Length: 218
Image 1 (cartoon, rainbow, N blue to C red):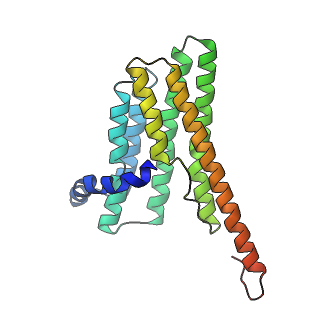
Image 2 (cartoon, rainbow, N blue to C red; image 1 turned 180 degrees about the horizontal axis):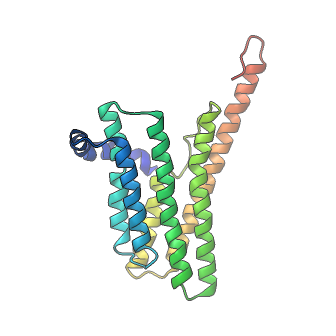
Image 3 (cartoon, rainbow, N blue to C red; image 1 turned 90 degrees about the horizontal axis):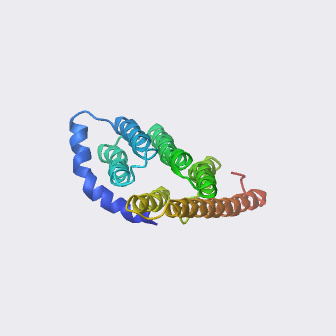
């Protein structure tokens, strides 16, 4: 998955800038909120209007810089449960802005009724599923399980839709964006299913351990 492979590169690229921000008094939570505000602003000011050449590089830069908050937190020893919660919550807002803006674009600009309906529907499905993927992981952790598996992390989903947006901006037919949304939806659905299966297996193992003589139920 791209997210796993990209973490080392992000750390190498953004550690020095993050430390410079720390010296200026910037906290990880400040970066988290500022990055989300900028990402949401960039999404709603470019995607609904069909600015598909500008949006991908702008959003890619903002989303890459989004890793600075975690790097800053680790480098300064300021990691916290609240910081992790805030980061995850802000990510959901940013993702919702991106996919929601694509829904608005499709509703306003696609002349083909069938394609418009399909694209809007796929966008709605994506909004739901891209939120369900991290929710499944968070809910699993709340019951003592681990659900970090899956074929599509956040980075993978955003790269897929970013490539589709750029392709349409370069002249590809609009259905390419619909295909990108369909791929994001399918990959997200598979990831949710994978996490459900893994958590079910772990929960059953915990229950068996709790039922054994001398065992303790988690």
